[in-house]
Length: 114
Length: 112
Image 1 (cartoon, helix red, strand yellow):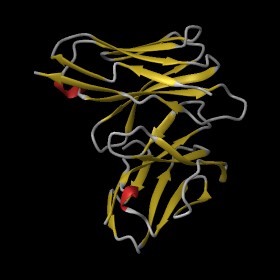
Image 2 (cartoon, rainbow over the protein chains, first blue to last red):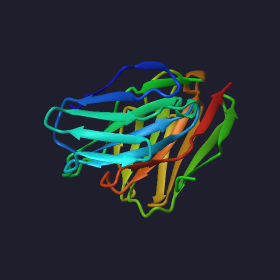
Image 3 (cartoon, helix red, strand yellow):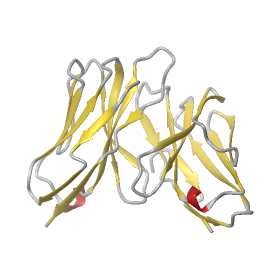
Image 4 (cartoon, helix red, strand yellow):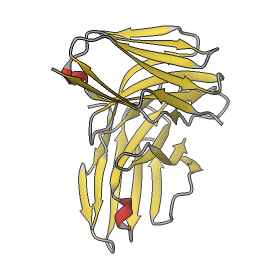
């Protein structure tokens, strides 16, 4: 059974810092991995999707990497801003073959203070 | 707007009421999901439909009843709920996970 762990569970940093959020998974037979952002009481907003054949994806100040063999993904946030404050979740989608139910981590709660 | 629309955004209901949550997607996806998110708890998968057939029922109490009349619509029928059912209910859709998952904004349910 796939297990997804996100470290740290919570993070508080001053504005301007570069951040790394970690996501690890136990079964490397994945189809893709997706990073989400969730603001309090809101739905999940997709940030980046990395297919299993890819090593990284970038969007603006965000960069996500994937090392499937070691079961790890990182989300790098450059020059953090107070507006980045949210919970960040990673979801691992199992390899194709009929299964399309993602496994989510518990998230990293990020606070960026001015 | 993500392409997945949930209504209503907020719902307050008594324990004896019957209500329904609605989810609609026009992304051409063929799988739809209901998740429950309670305060300070992780996402809990409730139901999964693929090609309009239920493929996962994650030990959800019978007071929650899903319905998927077509690939674009998903409902969650609620009856005789308990206060502990108060939570954020999220709907998601995907093309069987191939291109990730798209979530709606959620329905905040309060049972009084």
